[in-house]
Image 1 (tube, rainbow, N blue to C red):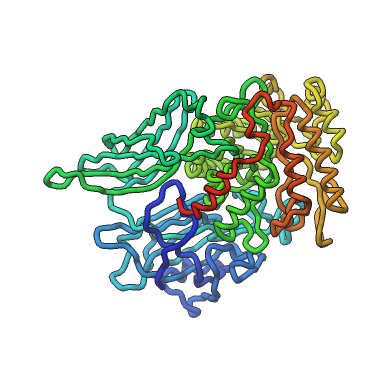
Image 2: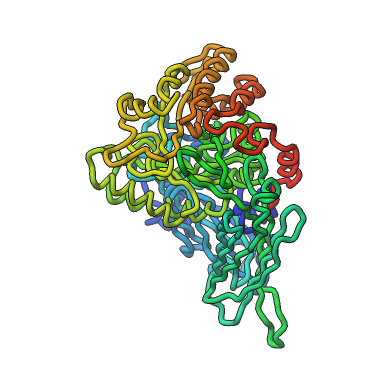
Length: 632
């Protein structure tokens, strides 16, 4: 089966080469409920005589979803996939096989030879498969995925462990659920890029790692452009497989030209980068070894004196909770066009960011957040039991998520734990408190440039932002709880929204920005189907708007509040509390929702910042994203 050159967003949008080949599409598939596939060598003997019960599946959609062509939501722990392809590389090149995500663990064979294994359901992995290729035209690729539906030590986020979705948990996403792709590469190549902006110093730093330490001297060249203007053309030597380039930008541009140079939802300025690796031939003439494309931005985020600062200025966060769930494909995005439209819809509703809830986003979603301008709070999918094994799994996968997404300018905060999920006795367990504290400091060690919230919502022991989950149905109650500093103090000490202590002993709120990172959750079921009414219910679009306005107005009028996150963007299975239906249809007039969300806040009055935050987004923002067509 010949693979085709794909269209749309690159599956690794911040390190792209011109040639890559998508293996999405029809694969052979079999459940292995008796777990006999390994002993019967299904990776070599794919036949009914070995116990294979073959059917077809459309990759990269999970078998629980309708988009996969199977739609079986039952318990199936072991899944097998098989397909053939023709190797697209040329003599002298290596061929890499990439998986965007396989939930939960995977083993990969090519032509009967084990070439890769990986554990962690939300992060990518790769293998150099060149040495396993056959001289024949047809190569046989087999994948075994193991995803135990009942293993609560396994990071799963909102994927349910019961027979049917219950409460706030949904259908599972097992096996391959992000793209599988091939990439021809040189033997010595650029393997990792890491962009770090320093707005205060006016420096953009690029750290590059190669896949190996080369035997010959190599040099790395960076050409950086912004708005068709060359910003840098720098060349450095590669030492021990690594190189660093620090691009120094005019200091005045960070202030006088901030709308042209800095990244924000209102001005999502990106710099395009071409990175080339050079060696020398026998005559000493420079010869190209590898070339990749990337992009970066100048953006800072900080918390100081009870305020959140974006690019050094007070900024009010207007977020919406995004479950990232699609009725037809579950956690797998239908296509990159769907993620672009999702980002546009969030912006059209007047929000300036999303809280990615209990999942690692598809890279195409982060790409469009970067391109179109949408802030992101990134969150680790939870396990639901505390154990040594769960600690090890969470730590390893959280580290991989940060490594994958570090360079995206849209991400401003990391959230390793939500609502004490996976640490259920945090108040009394020293081990669980140590784990939350360790995750916070690990996250800061890996990325000191962003905000970190140790445990979002309640029982906080270490955090950069004080976050509260408050699902009162009444705006006047929010005003009473957060309308002034004294009210906030009483609420944190005595009211304890969610019936949990917001601050654990030893934790103080002094100087921390306060955000209500979950509220609302107003259910309005437009099709009168079965739904979960966990918070409050509206009976019409008009009532939804009235209830929503009362809640948002209360928070915008509270000078002690630095931002909010409304629950939630879309209906998700039994949860009918989205502003949009599951198919992304607005339940109320988007223009009215936008006017509610975009009103100035008491915490950050309009005269304290530039005019963009409270006005319309510049039209060039939308135009630039669409005309780009999704190709980085």
